[in-house]
Length: 90
Image: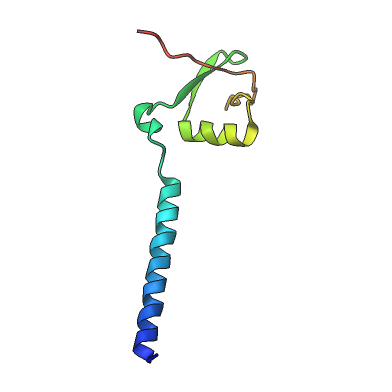
């Protein structure tokens, strides 16, 4: 195999690797389509603080994946005695 052909194959492999890595990276940072439908995120209520707070759906999914069914903690006091606000029925 001549040197030009080897260099060409190496260049193709490197370009393909960069394209693959870039697609994995940009696919990972892309927010879920649910965030388009619910840009305010999920609304939660902390009875201890008597406050509402919002959590992006991506953050909420990551929380449940690592913490199971434990409610999302209040960002102000850290209590997990929080409730997800139900959507209003129209």
